[in-house]
Length: 236
Image (cartoon, rainbow, N blue to C red; front, side, top):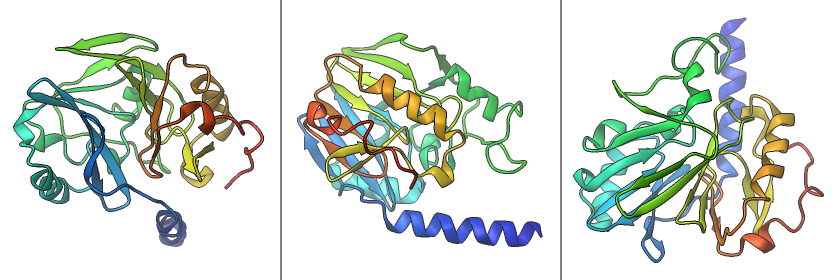
């Protein structure tokens, strides 16, 4: 029975991944770089001579390959802000050996066994130490200002990061479809009702100009991207 559940889950997840639309590795906005790792993007924000990563991807080898295209050394990445701890967002942590690792305080329960992510399984990250971030806490990493916004639903500790008051990185808190925000795929979201409430919080964050998702691209017009919410809330 358990084997059938895993097979069913795998087939459904594979179908979802085919519908994702990631961005090719490039500088997509001034000082913001996308790194394409099959069905997921991680992002790098230039910070003086160094970089801050938002998430850490799905495949360490693929990330290393894509960083070479950008001529960015992994050692130049001094921080990795995890939107959550699912496996497709954390695989490159060991590659970023000079990076401090950040995640929300509420996400830690998936790492320490207090809560399961899938069936009886929790999440794990390849880091001995990490720093916990509280809702709306402000971090100043060298010249870059970052504010974390707790947006539970996909996982209990999903967190969006607002960088320099205008760049919002949302991980899997939502997706974009033809430039408009929608709920993320319900099949892989732990609490869809809470996730919808979190989107209501996201659209009220002031000053946002750009919004970046992990699996469905980005928009340079946040005001336009949120115009159809909450009309487009049907399950997917």
